[in-house]
Length: 102
Image (cartoon, rainbow, N blue to C red):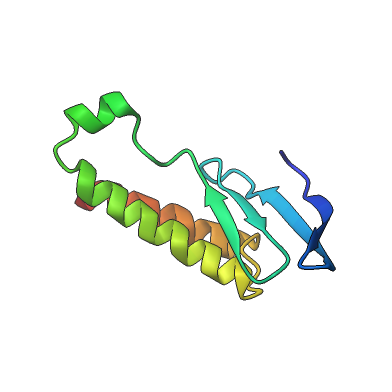
């Protein structure tokens, strides 16, 4: 997914538009906003089941990634431009710091 996908749906009798897009070159992060102020986020940052077994810091790493994803999603829901190159660079720096410290 490279371009935003916009869909129309009916929620509680009202038409709302949902939008989903992938952040460019940023760990496969896909953000979906539901048109009512909420949304979801998915990425390639989470450990595989095999890595979960072998990695001692898995719980801390997963918690840190969940926190980072939650912050990015909250910013997108609030209208902050998470596609800005400086913002994406900040995400990459945060992931590197998480990986280096856990």
